[in-house]
Each structure stands twice: as C-alpha cells, then as structure tokens.
Image (cartoon, rainbow, N blue to C red; front, top):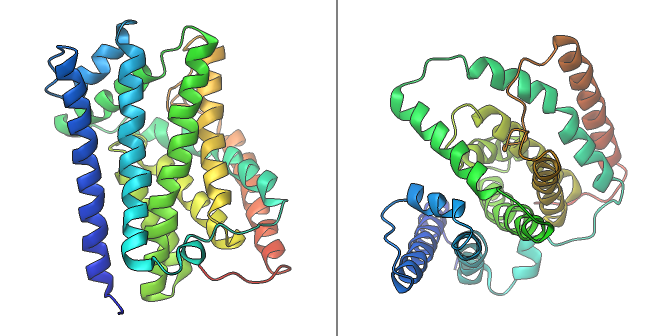
Length: 293
C-alpha cells in the first residue's frame, strides 16, 4: 500500500510525540521513586548541579533522547518500510575522503556562524524568546558540567554519540528523505529539513548557526548517499565542542559557536575556504556512482 506524504508526516509526528511523552513519564516515575519533585525541565537541569543526582539525571536525559530520536523513528520506519528497512535507511559505504572534507567544511563555517550570532544577539527580541534562549543555554551549561574524565566520557556519549545517531536518523534519515520522495528536489529537502532541525533546538541566537550546521549535514547525506556520514560528522561536531568545554574548564560557549565579534577578515577567508571545499565535494560526488536518497 502506498501512503501519502500527509499520512506519513502525521504518523511521524505521532510516534515522536509519543516518544517524548514516554521519556518524560520515565523521568517523572524515577523522580517520584527518589522523592524528587520535578514539575518542569528547568528543575531537571537544576538537579544536575547536585553531584548526588547528576549521574542519574544524565542517564534519564540520555534515555529520553534515545527513545525520542532513535526508538520513535525506527518505529516509523518499521510501520511504513518494514520490508526494506536497510535500503530506506541508506546505511551505505561512502567515499572515505568525505570523512575529512565535511568536518573541515563545517569547522570552516564557524567564524561566519559566530559573526551572525554576534549580531543576532544584539536584536531586542520579545521577552518570551529571550527567556527561552537563556534557559536553553543555561540547561546546556548544566548538562556540560564535568569534573572528572568519567564525566567527560559520559558526556561524549550523551551529547556526542546519541544525538549524532538519533537526530540524524530523524532529521536526515526520515524527514529529509520523505520531503525528497514527495517533491524530488534534493536541495529543497535539505534546506527545509535544516530549518526544522534548527527550530527543534528552541534557540533564537543559535537558530541560524544551527540551520547552517543542518544544511552541511544535509549535503553530507545527499552527496555521500549514506546516512552514516552525517551521523559521524554530527557526533564529531558535538564531541569536539564537549572536549573544548572540558579542557577549557568551562570557559568556552557551550553551543560551540563564539558569540564575540569575529574579525570580518577571518569570516571572509574561512567562508571562501568553505565555498572551495563544498565545490570540491560536489565535483568529487560526480566521480562516484550516484545515490538516490
């Protein structure tokens, strides 16, 4: 049976929402078991400041993310593509050069992200948006608190590996793919998915940088024909930010994009490098067998 785009979109929304609810219920249940009163996400992240609760809270957050971004998307794939799961997920071999080229392209765009963030941060947004932004950054700072190498390893799994796999499975592996299937326009699918990906992080200052990251991950999927590549690049990006935060003693921006005014010359130079890298990646993709999404 062939299902419509709307049917699959509603089904995906339903399973992801169900995943979020189940994850939250698990956290609430465990909190009740430990006698902790949690009525908001803010209180969950406040508990991260307590060394006695922090390891448990991080496990619950990781479990929540695992259910929302890995279990829920896999349920969707099983419902609609159970007879061709492997083909649908595109867990294919990819050109080895991409494993170096795409991270370089991503990191070369960081000065532009910082430049954009600096000016967006100067905009006087409505109070509710400003509050959402500050709470998001505060939550990330609490999550990134690390005192020992064991904390670092735990955070590399929680912030690097799990989101790298899960978010790419949902956003590139399903949403980008389904948009491509519906309209057969790969670039449209990449940019729409990048906007959705960024919006899902509920940040204002970081919206455009997150969208740029989403675009690069989208092209990593498109040019390589493999979902494994954006998973690796995403996990690497988050892990590098986590490592930088740990070794700086918490003195770098937790979102890994600088908010200070970046020199314009650095922005121009790095953006030119980014443009050249993407041009080279595109030319390289023509030399290997084409992969449909």
